[in-house]
Image (cartoon, rainbow, N blue to C red; front, side, top):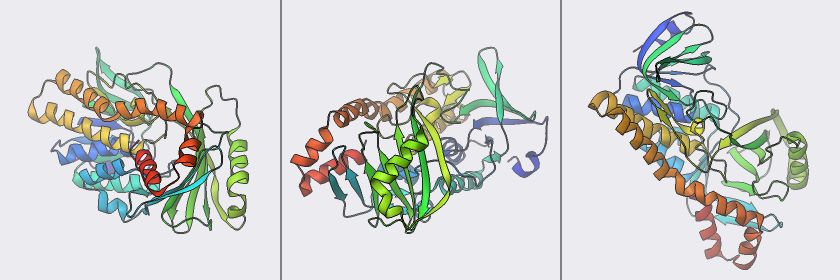
Length: 380
């Protein structure tokens, strides 16, 4: 195993790996951990930051995300540092307010500083190596094949396969066409009253078909934010968040303490899952635009696509599978896992825009109907 601490400060060093991974978010870390679990020996993951580090994200992990964490053997470790969720307060565009509660915990909120650090520690324990402060400038190529990447300080990772997992603003993915972006801005507070073990999703008309949220990260700490479409960047995110807070949380924030400053980020998505592989290269998570078009969720898709990529690379490196066949199978598996849900996002967004959410809640605001709505949203 490469000793990360010895390698961090060396410049102009060349490190050889079976798999080099760009980006240590959930997608890249899931790939690194699962590769090590599957017996791939030389796995190096790099990130521009050292860990633990903060990451702007709502940090909610859906039921599907919990299943993926369990499959990686991380469920208990992550749950121990998370806030369990068993229900949701939903506010429709027309202002109807309904509680959707379950009998058991179905999701969690885990601050990304904590989640990513736990995943990194588990990956290192399994045998993967980590290099922080590694800002990738370009890929290394031999003919049409990717053979690694180079950092700004001159360090090189020479890899049989490169996994691209550096998120929305990647410059190293296969797809280079126009992106669809969701804008998001959020902040953190202590001392905000909320329903125990419940998240809040508020489908304000100013954000339609997207929403604002309150996600509790602990019994006394929440993050509150908004996401919305603004392809031409004509709207002021901070003004929109302030208006949202004044409208929906003014009284509840009056005695609260804000932690840090508001932070914004962009979420990249596409209803169509395009090319994710080329010779020597595999793209995972948000770098491959595998983020849910309606909910903007990306943690589950990142983890699961990272696991699928790891299995394909294990087949090639350890079992002699034909690379083209294994990588094509990876793309098919991603489409099978996500495509139907992504297509359904267009239906959901139209449903919200046409006031279907108000109609459904207004007519069918009964316990059984609320349970169906809760399950539908949880499985998107």
